[in-house]
Length: 198
Ligand SMILES: [Fe+2]
Ligand SMILES: [Fe+2]
Image (cartoon, rainbow, N blue to C red; front, side, top):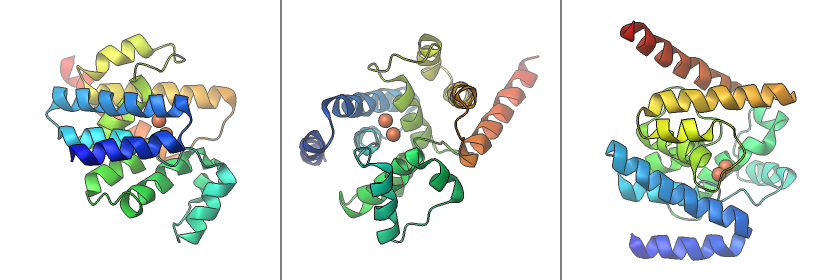
C-alpha cells in the first residue's frame, strides 16, 4: 500500500501543475487527519484524497469526449456545468487506470465536488478536506469551517454546501441539482439537531 502511494504521487506529480499537485497532497493528508479524528480507514482516506483531482488537468471539452468514449453517461446538469465532471471521470480513472478496487474510495472521488445526500464517512471526509486543506485561502468562512470539521462533520458538510451554493448563486453560476439535493439533506440534518438542542 505504501509503495503504491509513492508511485501514485510520482505519477500525479508529472501530470498535474505544481499548484494542483500541492493541493492534491494537502487534501490527501487532511483526509488522513479527518480519518484519524472520526475513526475512518486511514489508508483509504489518504488514497482517495490523493486521487480526488486526478482528472482535473483535462479541459471541459476533452473530459466530455473521454466520458463519451468510455460510455460514461453524462447528466444534463453535467453538460451545463462540466467543471464537476473531473470528479466523475476521476472516479473512472481511479478504477480503470490506477486499479483502485475499493468502491468506497471510488465513490469518495466521485462525489468530492457536488457532494450528495447521505454521504458515507469517507465521502464526507474527502469532500471536506477538499474545501479546508491548508493551501486554500479564498473562502471567508475557512477558519470557522476548519475548526468545525474536527468537531461535527455533518454540520461542516452543511456549512460548506451552504457557502458554496450561496457563492455560485451570487455569481449567477449554474448549480448542479445533486449539490442542491445534498444541501437540502444536510440542512435537514442540521435543523433536526438544532430542534433536539432546543
Ligand atoms: Fe476537484
Ligand atoms: Fe480538489
